[in-house]
Amino acid sequence: MKLVVENLTSGYRNVPVINNVNFEIHSGEIVGLVGLNGAGKSTLLKTILGLLPNQSGQVLIDGISIAEDHQKYASQIAYIPETPILYEELTLKEHLEMTALGYQIPMKTVMQRAQPLLKKFRLEKKLEWFPTHFSKGMKQKVMIICALVTDAQLLIIDEPFLGLDPLAIQQFTDLLKKSTVSGRSIIFTTHILAIAEDLCDSFLLLQKGQLVAQGDLNQLQAIYNLQKANLNDIYMTMTKTGEVND
Image 1: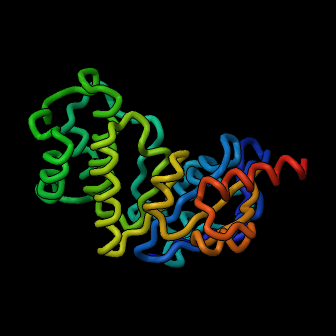
Image 2: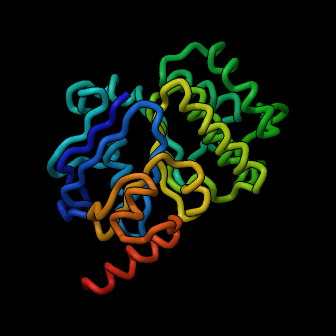
């Protein structure tokens, strides 16, 4: 899988939020998208997902844009939003059935993939439960399971750790690391920079809709002339630089 974002400008009602963004993500990579609130992170992710139209530039997955082949493009992506999106009238099992239909995967296959995840997140006895009986953390776990069972090659995650307890965070990050072995690529946003530093192969630093730096930790240290700095140090330097340029 190869994701190419090329000269991408996108936003709302023809007002750009991200401007001329360029990067690539290759098979098996975990990439952290880092920036302040309002930097354009969610806008970028929603544009890649096809939830927002691009104003200029393009997004390609294995050379295909959403305009060229919507079904093939969309089938390569699974999404975990910041706020869980569940249907109150559907049980956990019915959410899995809906996922199977959406990705055209046999339900038997989905349940085989789901069983170890349900057990890991202690939801194996709650298949007939409705979302009204779930805590926020449990709802987030349902979203995680529904995304992972698709076996989509690109996983897009927006602030995945909100509502999860420390054990669930550790279990989830372990799952993400293991999932890249089969070639899955991951792009996600988080404000928990210590986790991002441990988990990610490289980073995209977004500020005021502009991609101001990208690379692994060593490359970012070189860009900001901060030897042995951690990701939090680099992040703080980036935000201060933005204030100076205002």
